[in-house]
Image (cartoon, rainbow, N blue to C red; front, top):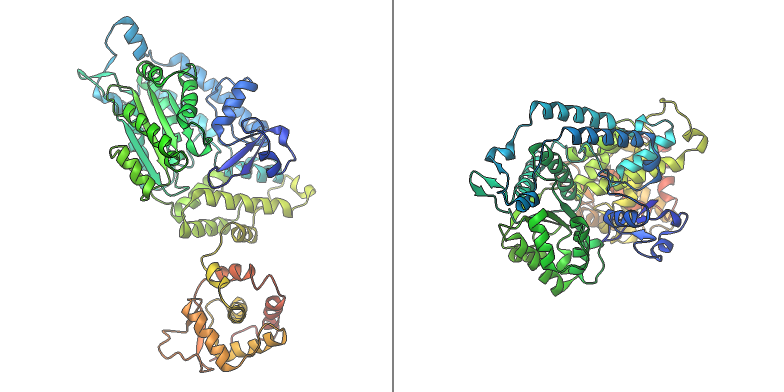
Length: 573
């Protein structure tokens, strides 16, 4: 089994082992749900129907390394042992169904049950469980050979990799921690619906809308909270909570209501062709927390039918006596679809996830792959770049994975089989920079692409001098003109008169790519002694130029070598 990059609607495709060796196009030309899958839920359905999977709590992650790793196999056995011991020591639980059958009132619980401290036995159990989890967690540098370490890195960098110790959500971001607390409280109220608390029947919390930019940890946070909910319910004596996660973006454009009810029917263990009224009856007996990811796609892809189905779901949520609650997740914050969700959802409880900052992204990467495999400076660079653009954690994971690929490609098979610890880091800064060039266009790329050829040449000269003399070194108009004369010999420029150079310099200054030395108050582009320097990061301009001018000619490399040889230091003023 393996995974393939997705598109704007699907994050990743999961390819069956029978498709080994096929290209992405060949895989996607096969049968959906048989040869390839668009979500983990689809893989689980296939596993139940064809591979005899029984619905184990431990979620699978794509990749042969994960399935065959002795570390993961050991972790699986430990989890099974821990689950078995927990079952033996779990408190007696009474479900709504049992209460209804016996005619008794729901089990009475005090309001402190939502903040109930576990008993001493449970505290010890939790402590053991926590220690066991720490032991189960393996970092890539704990693998045997260099190849194992790098391949395990790629596994842990995959967005769908399930971190059982909540590594991804344990960042220093206190805002996210507060949001997670609110999600947990919502879920606890959801499973408490129908129970008697201080003589009053607890009501359903209804609908929660979670939004924020892509890759800000929304889905990960909800998944971690569901994991916490299952443990909390067991310790607090509640019936096992039923939850159902559906990603609308991974579904076909058919009857959305039918497709979603089909998935929900498996969680409720009822016939998939049951009518909505039958679902409501089973909600009353068993309850459900429905998580709808990419909920805005109900309107984008399914139009009026999606809107009608959304209204039905909201109707169920607003029945305060019905133990059915829904959490909608979306990248839409202030657009038309977000407004529609708020209006049709009757202004639900809303949580907005902020973008990750540089510290958060670095923490996420290091908790997934450790601090040895990838150069710390490389991790700091990708964290800084992503934080400055979108704050999308998935983008940081994707680019870092690409850098690991480049490290694998650069090494011989013989070296990869070595087991020494003398070659850290295995992924160097240049490999990360190349991955950034491919996966993350610079902010200035579009501006530079629109420049005339002559302006690109002058910028190329300034970059060459900055690379040798230092990015903050001042360059005079006379120096630019001198090296521009060489460009005319390479047919890169038609002329290098002071008037032509000054016009091009003014164009580059207007675009913000060059700036005057000091405050620029007395700067004159027609004065050969006037000095300027790069107005942006040298690496940003170099990456942008490499996709246009630098990749087309040897002039840049030749100029850098010439300056290093003839004038390695900037001329004195």
